[in-house]
Image (tube, rainbow, N blue to C red):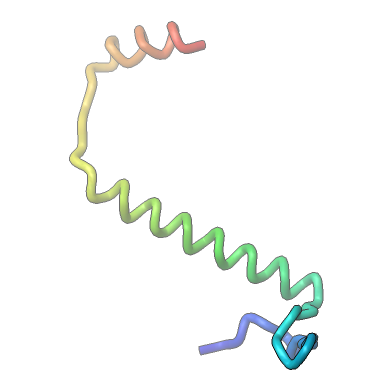
Length: 68
């Protein structure tokens, strides 16, 4: 598995405990993108488990006009 980070982050300790992590902004944005992708995949899986429901085109268009 390939690492998301390009280089190891700087770790800040305070009183012997992990306090903060310093990342390059590019790595931080990459992590956020990966998290969003994961959330999108989870949502897609949830939607795929739902039963399909179909409407007649005329019914859909009538509802759509009212929502605009």
